[in-house]
Image (cartoon, rainbow, N blue to C red):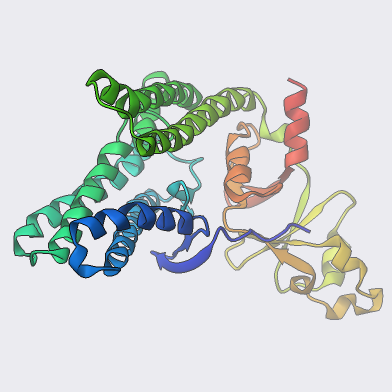
Length: 371
């Protein structure tokens, strides 16, 4: 039986039907920001006392809002291009939007990437224009801080290297020019490594060149950001090389037979059509794969009860995004992307609205080992 998708945090909202989660690691960012900003506010505004830390907490909340708006823009754009969006998550590394990108094009990928920074840019502009109307003191400081946060997020994410949105634009450009998405990933990954070096030079080399001392806090932030960027860029390079190999495997070579059944059928009718080796896939009202029949659960049903037992009673619902649309002669890239996105070890494959079969991660690994 396939395990249900593990939730990446606490669900706090939904955007156009897309669940929004805040990961537990986000609390670490909030605590660090309050610890860093609180004393600074307390020194500049000694009259408010411990309320300085409450103001710092509001700034941390502003950052969360800016990140979620950024990711919501990605999600809405992906939905506009007809790509299923699975979730939006804010966590230690900022935020990310998980969606099925297998059917995207260079143009749609570029649009989806750029709308996140654009959303932050709009928030920064609106906040900046509203500053003259804000009360002096803390309200003005918070609004100015919100403008700065969004401007910084927009600018940083447009840097031309993966895993940033600017890197997605580089990937899309190379993809469009060469016809190879994997080549785009590799080039954008190397650009990401170059961006990492430039970020380190900005934080550490610039003060040294100006004859200033290097603050330990600057070193900590530089290492944190650089580790995130380098890891993401390296993952993109490895992923690009892996997908180059995956492109050589045809879907027909890894498909396992499957029997599609309606969710309201009974076990006796299903087992009468089932043959050894078939995986039983439960279809929803639109004939889309929705669940898997669990052989262990079937084994606990007395044969005399097959006629009274519906398949829904012995099936396990699967996470959204666990099925892909592809033809037998297509490569297995959409399957691999779905496995990585959903965290599934088995993916259902449909073609022109008909269930073709299923692919397991073990089948993919064996096919890769034969290359």
